Each structure stands twice: as structure tokens, then as C-alpha cells.
Image (cartoon, rainbow over all chains, first blue to last red; front, side, top):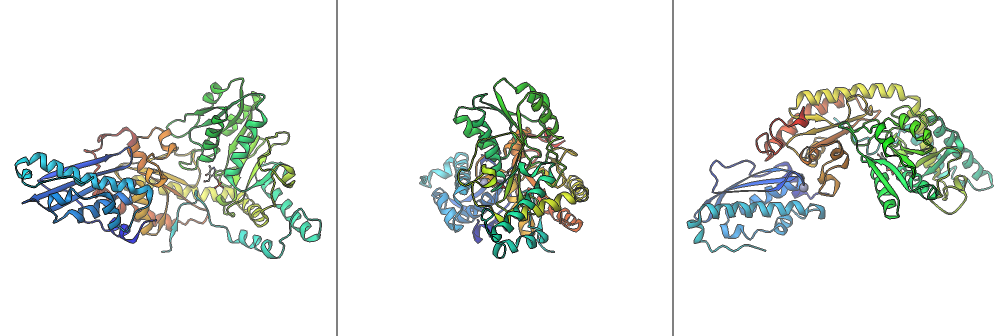
Length: 134
Length: 398
Ligand SMILES: Cc1ncc(COP(=O)(O)O)c(C=O)c1O
Ligand SMILES: [Zn+2]
């Protein structure tokens, strides 16, 4: 039911772990629905130079976490805010319809980490002209 | 090592002897059992022999066995058929919160048709209390349906006591014995059972064939209308190879029941003890001894069941889970919630169900591989003793 890409990111997830002093961190989901994701980002000069995740969840949740970190690493904060769950799913060659819920969490986790960064570093973020994707 | 199949509660391999018995009935002895000619009469004789094999396995008469297309149909027929046949007497049905969906969704549908259903709770091991059944009985109760053994956590239900109670009160008793047939001894008379559902593919028979035992004198409404097959109670040309296969499979399963059960119980306990000893923060779901000889069900804290199944599959091991992500909904298994597990712990469940062909080497291999996979998944999980809202000393992990 999962594509080869999903299985690749599930069995060899990229960027697993935590950052020591992240610029921003976001945790979304809850144990009730069975998926929780936490993303840490390190921002330098408006660029996400490092990102790590930890996920409690199914195969799709782990694979989308991994893919989402790959997609925002090295990107500008403004670009990370444009990340959508659809883009993450497409990058994984698609997800089964019942698993789109899990990819929503990946989008939300990245956005939550960026918002946390903005809240903690308002003076830095002010110069970045941030708008959020719908 | 070859792939290790530990999902026998989902389905089993057709036994080689069963397959051999079935094969001639596809293209040599393919007659319609209703036909007058000798090709048809040969088929009729074979169906009658299989009916006898099924009847003997549960202490019934052959005339009390009706072949169906499987466990789901048998459950639907017993419950809907009884509800409508007894409508003049009452509209109340008693069942449990942990039944298979073939029973639960049938009862929920009947509620929409104006019937009233009591879904009894179970204790922490998944057992129904006979006192609760008794308290739920009203003068409108027409049917009690309680499964013989639960398909997820393997808990055995006190069906003989419940059957006795039902008969004292003059109420019909149905049991979904789909997981119990061939695994534990069953006797419809000693256990006061009026209707019993079974399914061929759970005991090394073929898929798409099952049976409903209906006690002589009990008359649920006809469910499948049409021809006069199955004493005019269940229409449709017989699934001849399926019936032959199910007859052979149930004969083998019941002949070897004690030996198989003893073997599997030993391997089951080795697997349970090994998992509990090797992996920290694991709990056994279901009862330690009042459980199917082949069922292991554990919850492994901080990880999610589907991810675990995928990793096991990559390691060549087939199991199943009651996590939401394997059920296609956002809720984990209704059985795990009914025994009181919080969602977080229900999501981390793993069921390993042994077969009569499971070897000790396979159990050892699972015990060798599983701890490492759990460690890996825990290392990438955001949940741990500090982050879990259930805290470090979660009472469900005793
Ligand atoms: C307890 C129980 N009842 C009913 C069924 C349904 O049986 P079948 O697949 O033959 O329709 C199953 C099978 O999963 C089961 O385990
Ligand atoms: Zn998920």
C-alpha cells in the first residue's frame, strides 16, 4: 500500500533526533489519534540550516516527517512556511487516502516550529516578509 | 530463514491434506448436489459427509449444520434472523462491547430497525461477567450473543455459564466461535448453545466457507432466499470444494486439538514470557491463562503499532495490530479500549497469532528480532517516560 519512497523514508528516516538549542520547536498531534510529531529547527540569517524530528506514529507519519525535514533543510524560513502536506505527499510518490491525515501533521509541525522561531526571535523574523501558505 | 507467519487469527494456510481432499471436487466430482443424476448424487454424498464432520466437531446433529459463506454471514444470519423471527416476543438483544464487527455492526443496524441492544462491558482481561448478563435481561430479551473467544486479545468467555443462564430464562443463546473452533473443545449441548458461527479459513480450511449451527427447533428467519438448499434455510448452489475442505479441516483440527493446543500453549507462553522479559514497559493484553492457545497480544509503550508491523514485515515476520493506523479510522481497536486501555497504549498493540505449524525456532527468531526493532522505534519516538501524559509509572504497565 505504500510507495517505495515512503518505505525508504520509513526504514531510513533522515534527520531523526533533537537539536540542542533549537531556534524554534513545534509539536503537533496527540496520542489519541496515534500520531505525534516534534520538529526542531536551527535558523541562521533567515535560512533553516538544520532540522531534526521525533515522531510517535505510523509508517506514513514517520516517512512524512522525514521527507518534510528534507524539504525545508537549507530553505529560507519564508519558503518553509509555504510547505504543504500535498507537496510532502507528492514528494513521497503519494500516500493512501486514509494517510493524508498523517501528512497534514508534517506540514503543521514545520509551521509550528517556524512560528515558535518567529515568536522567540521577533526582531530577526521582522525582516523576513513571512506569509503562510494556505 | 523463511518468512514467519504469525497472523493465524486473520487467516490460516489451507492444510496440504485439506487441499488434496478438495481438488477432485473442482473438475472431476463437480456435480450440483441438487441434481438427480449420479454426478449430482456423488456431490450430495460428499456434502453430507462433510456436514457430519462439522457436526461431530461440536457435538451437534448433521441436520443442525447449515453451510454459509463464512463467519460474517453466520453471525448476520443468527442475529438478524432471530431478531425478526422473535419480534413478537420482544425487541431486546444482549451482546458485548468486544464482539467482532460482524456481530457489532449487525446489532447497530438492528438498532436502526427499532431493536434495542445492550453492549455489555468487560473486565480488564476482556471477560464478560455472568452477573452482568443476568442483570441486563428484561422480559423483552430475545437473544444473547457472546463470542466464545475474542479475536484480538484471545480471551475466552464463560459461554457455558451464559448459555445455562440463557436457557434458564428461556432466551436463545448464540456464540461467535470463529476463533474457538479447533482451538478449544466445544460442545453445543453441554454449553447450552442454540446457534454457533464458524469459519473454515480460521482452522486451515479454505476461505469463503463457514457454517451456522442451529439447534433443532430453533428457527431464525431465512436470510438468503432462493433455492431449497440447506433444508430450504440458506439458498444457493453449495460451495462444494469449500464444504469438502471445511469438513476435512475441522476433522483434522478436532482430532489433534489437545496435542496442538498443548504445543501452541507452550510456544505462546514462551513468546509472552520472552517479550515481557526482553522489552521494558510492555504489557500483556487479555488474560494470562484464560486465552486462546495461539494468541499473544501485547502493548509496547511509546511506539505505534503500524510502524512496528512494517518493521517486522521488513524482517520477515507477519503480525497484526489494533492501532488506529491499521484500522483506517482515528480510533484504535474497540476491544483494547473496552478493556480500559488509554489510546496511547492501545495504539502500540501487537498481536502475534501462532498456527499449528509454528515452530520453536520461529518463536526464538521473533524474540531475537523484536527487541531491536522496538529500541529503534523508541529512539525516534517523541514519546517517553517524561513526555507521555500517562507519566512514568503508568498503572497500565504493571
Ligand atoms: C470472531 C470473528 N468473528 C467473525 C469473523 C468473520 O469471519 P469471516 O472472515 O469468515 O467472514 C472473524 C474473522 O476475522 C472473527 O475473528
Ligand atoms: Zn498515521
